[in-house]
Length: 256
Image (cartoon, rainbow, N blue to C red; front, side):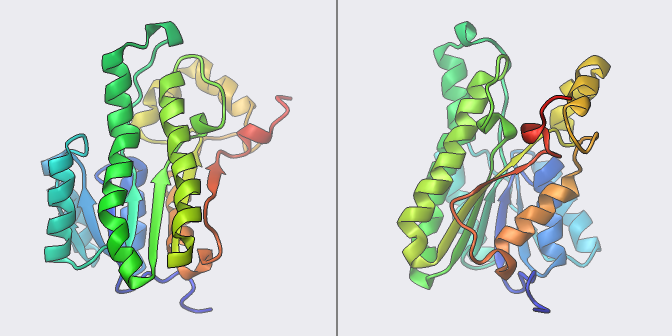
């Protein structure tokens, strides 16, 4: 029981981990013993985050990567192996949201959104899973979104791509469960991040949203990180194929 939340001696690759929820997840896994690979397309951000983590006693390695390019993902996985060892935990936290109505979706917007939000997840997972199969152990977590389970007027394409991640988690959980590989998605609601500023900085919008949320507040990055740690550790050992919603109760509220 004492080691239920330990990820000691695990190698955890966290994409999108120089800011927001990805950074909080990387820090918490590092605090609990993992060697964390800090990665995003922001090279300076990776180095600064690595330094910050190392100053806290966290084993951190910065490896920048633009996940929209397959050759960069190839290099990321190879360099992780060379510097830290085989990947035990993959947590994919990248994503873009291009606002617009359904009739405004064009091929460029569609391809960019799907490439970064969904295609990159599929490709990096394909690179990582075979070694997990060999070890008969592995953890994969996708950062999806509340948009994956609700209708969206202005972020519809984003919601479609994030719903794809939740379905990907279900598919992989079924296919690779016999190899002792657990795959889950986390769908946060409104969390206090730079990504959510368009909503949280709009008093009229955020006031309405908070009134629809039973806890009457927005979420914190550490609350999402805590769920990631649960899923990555023995504590979450019998959880797989789930899309876990962290939204303060927004989706279950009756609106009163």
